[in-house]
Length: 294
Ligand SMILES: Nc1ncnc2c1ncn2[C@@H]1O[C@H](COP(=O)(O)OP(=O)(O)O)[C@@H](O)[C@H]1O
Ligand SMILES: [Mg+2]
Image (cartoon, rainbow, N blue to C red; front, side, top):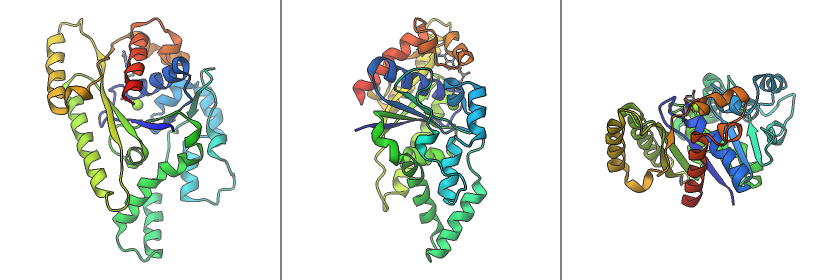
């Protein structure tokens, strides 16, 4: 059975996407896993980390992005009929086992979704709009992924920062979530906010169906023990381990490494582009650690 793993933090710029694409690549390349990356952020960083902008533009023109699959749920009578298999790019980065469901700069219109759900509520004579909304977000992503869920060992969901409909839907259909964080106070606040939201999400859906997501671990990204402020970083990390327990913090940290950021220029993650770099070695080790936890 495969696992769905969401990479999430309320805060942006903490390394969610970098972790998603490098973890996915390590799983495919070094562990022979079949892996799908789904880009849920309209900044499309995961998409552009695995495919060139030219390739993306070509696919977007023929509607082969995640947006189409959401459109199809909102309005099933599409002129063009595509399946999720038509939209998945397989493989990406010339790496067998590594697939991408490309994201889009424009995923859905909140107003259209609200209108649809309002209409459904009226038709069903259901006057509890919240119940309809909750049901929609709980099943949305699960429904989209259902036809291919069995085809992968891992499906990695790269969430947007904040807490939008798609993040909630991702958390509702995932087995695990990973929380990348920078060792700095605001990033730690992002962890606490997300934790609180997930507890609320579990509560609000309890009556309909249980949400069983578990935290796989907190990963400190862009930490650098050699910096002068190492002591300060350490204090922050100690605070997190007091709050969440040592077991939740991954032993492997990802160091600051310019090769990690530069890899985007080559349209492939650093673990492929520069496997000998410090960042790549750390991602490889982290992948092993996370596999053990799973
Ligand atoms: N270990 C690292 N060393 C150097 N730069 C990094 C590292 N990890 C991420 N970055 C850079 O930091 C920025 C934010 O990372 P990203 O993964 O896009 O964060 P998020 O998805 O949380 O917004 C990107 O420009 C990325 O290339
Ligand atoms: Mg991102």
